[in-house]
Length: 240
Image 1 (cartoon, one colour):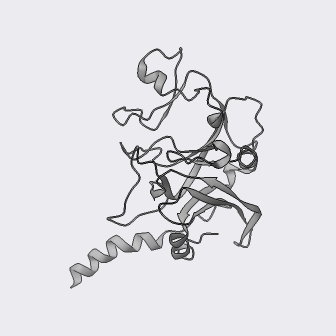
Image 2 (cartoon, rainbow, N blue to C red):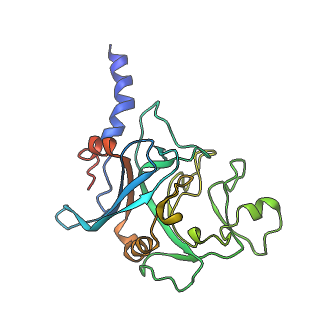
Image 3 (cartoon, rainbow, N blue to C red):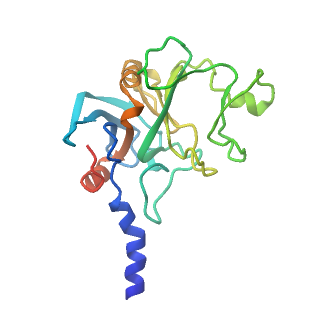
């Protein structure tokens, strides 16, 4: 009986003992209607000095992976037996994630002064090959790409939807091979009529607003969950 109880506690307590970092005072919260939905409603929150979360502006629409969501690898724990995101599953990673820098074609893109902005050139690669030691990592070559894998991994593909993006720290920086790679916020396709391979997309104006608003010194996070999971974990995880 004692062994069974310990086993139960080991696999369940971590899921509920987690909470947002206390020094996090900016959050993007995405709520989907269910695990298989590719539609998401996004909210911007700021936490005041007294610890209360306040909604900033009106919620806005976005798109997710065409097959919905699966638990990702981020700041949050997850219990044994859950379905985790994997490479090529066309699901967006669910959970709580820190955010990386912004990337774009235009070097004059306006962004928060504390947020790093990286101009995407033809020499910038993001590796999605699960067999590569550089999986889910950025590489900047000191020459133009020549090998087939280099050309395939180029971040600049003259694709307007990827002309501005913000990295979501899923399965990073310590990447698990096959655990999912290259997860960003970026511009949506077809005015929001098309789902993604796993990224979160939105209208260009909303993405620009995020990039100008996010301040790394406030330890911003992205919370992405189905409605039922959000409601079940909101109090324990101290979500907005």
